Length: 158
Image 1: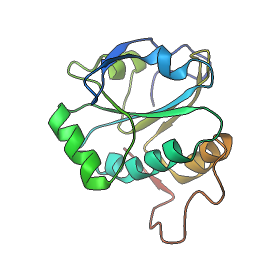
Image 2 (image 1 turned 180 degrees about the vertical axis):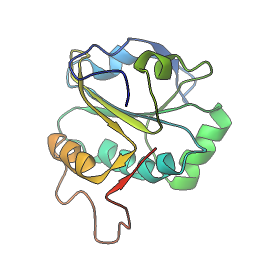
Image 3 (image 1 turned 135 degrees about the vertical axis):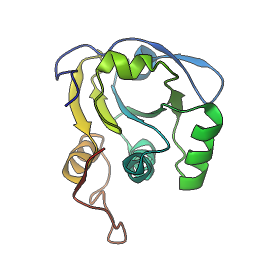
Image 4 (image 1 turned 120 degrees about the vertical axis):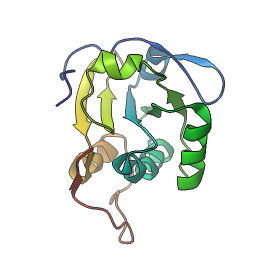
């Protein structure tokens, strides 16, 4: 289990983005909050969740942002997103993984939902269908979040 707990403050780090800019995490969560999906390209469960992270990002109506954070080199991260057709703003957590270490991540992917004040609302490790459905509702997405042609498990550990 991740060591970061609900109610705790997310560390405000500066991370590089695939857009070539440095990003302060607080600029993403300020106001309406942010859902961060932290993973890496070699992880099958990260590959499973990324298209749904993009679906959250494009469907959110509450102002909450969605960001992917990949623990990969920029070329590998860009290639993965392109392969999966996952068009979502992406940050990098380069070795020695300051975000992963700051969160105490034990597995990838880990989803961290943060309030507009930077407090952790939810931590989800791996792929959890019911948690993604709950987040989709909170972000104002149309139901059902999962479509009949989505062949996904109920749960897959990271």
